[in-house]
Every structure is written in structure tokens, then in C-alpha cells.
Length: 67
Image 1 (cartoon, rainbow, N blue to C red):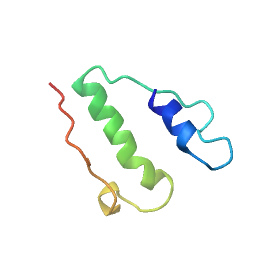
Image 2 (spheres, one colour):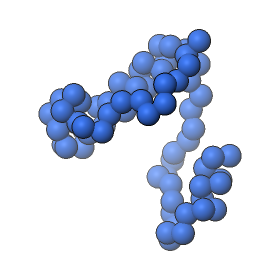
Image 3 (cartoon, rainbow, N blue to C red):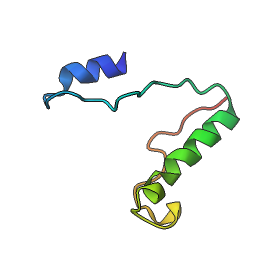
Image 4 (cartoon, rainbow, N blue to C red):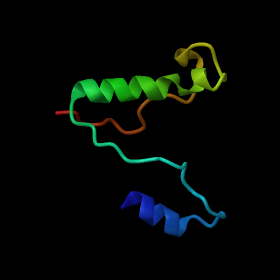
């Protein structure tokens, strides 16, 4: 639903989304931790820094309730 709404609001030419992208429902704390670590490592994989801690744009914008 979010993707559909954003697609309608984006005025840039298509495609708006990475091919093969899909939403994934996080079902447990372990899954959340695994996915968060993957995201933390993105700037390292892209060669933007050597350690995730060096990347200034990390952290949760909104605390997610994992209960």
C-alpha cells in the first residue's frame, strides 16, 4: 500500500523501485536484528566507510515497538 501511494506521488520518470524488491514482514526479534545488521552494513558494502559506526546517517528515526 505504501509503495502504491508513493508511486502515485513521485513525479520522476519510471522505474521508481529496484527490480526484484519485495516487502518483508519481520516476525521476531531475531529477524529484526538480522535485518537491522544488514542495513547497517549497506554503507560498508557500498565502500562509503570501513565500519558501520563511521556512517553518520544511521539509527532509528522512530523507535519500533518490538513486543
